[in-house]
Length: 113
Image (cartoon, one colour):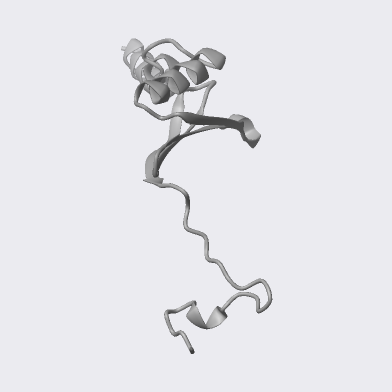
């Protein structure tokens, strides 16, 4: 029965090979996928849309709706989503007096004045 090891090897090889069709169920890759995600975010009411291409092929799409933002980061060639999250907008940035510089005493909540 030499055929049995060949069948087992073929089955293991098939299971180990990535299937890109499972990642992208709509068959969209590249620019059509970027357009699809952008249209989806606009349909959800996000008005200000920013699209940024990152190194290694990652695309980040930021949509802003009032005081909420949604960021979707994905790889358009594979369709793999790296991040899809919402957060408060605008981002809170610590401010300080430009004449005095930053207040480092407040880093751990220990304000000195």
